[in-house]
Length: 388
Ligand SMILES: *[C@@H]1O[C@H](CO)[C@@H](O)[C@H](O)[C@H]1NC(C)=O
Image (cartoon, rainbow, N blue to C red):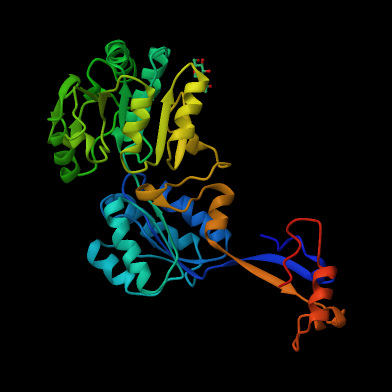
């Protein structure tokens, strides 16, 4: 948080130049329902660390957590600086009519556009933590049981309602044949013969989300799972095969425990497939050949990247977390949160000395002055000749 001294050029040698990290002012944090505590509290910590006041808007869909935050947060935070606002779209619309100094939104790309339009009205800077379909390329020679374990864990954690979960698998037809029994075995090992009985397998947040995900089971063919129970909002860990890129399961972010597999002949086709779509929050690759991993890393674009695992890159606070393109704008976690919620103010405190040097830049101009400027400031070091 300290002022950060920076390099100076020749004419500012006697001066003080630094970056001051200042709070933006009043920040609006809008959280989603899938990790209703984490995705409010983690940005909130960054906003507080940077010295801002915060209006906190938890999702009304995860209503128990919304209630908990509204009841408990105010007893821990200064009421002059922090407030929790509850309610749905009508309340958010009303909230967004106000001028904030920063908006931090986590949610869908669709609502992200509404946020950005609302922020534009007041020229309010914002961070958008959105989502997308995270591709996962599985190379032919991979250790497929380990791959399956890590895929099933990433896909089924929180019943798939995770923005950086692997959304679909790209692999060859031969790899698909070997991967299917490994996926089946991982599901059984984690959740038992009937995942519905498992205390470690979650349910879908709402009826609306349940209906949406259940409809996706019509894409391609169910190879594993596929069972649903509307009353419980249960959807079994499911793997879809023979899915066409034009089918619904390949058109929207799945956000449920459903993993489609799309077959591609080779890694270059997989890269072309990834690049023909919106830039995702994460690209994942499983391969024993590290050149192949580098190839996918070099030739694709995404918020983050993971080799040989999914989700784990977000556990490092030394890495920025955020999307690119339709998966988001800006990033946070660890020090990146502090920077996101700070304005970096460029400060130069000049001394009043060395006025003859300054006289060179004052009119009236002459050939002689120009010559002096050029000779005095013909500096060999790069980056220091920025007087004019
Ligand atoms: C991925 O795992 C495989 C199998 O353990 C290993 O050979 C490979 O080097 C790993 N890839 C990277 C990029 O570390």
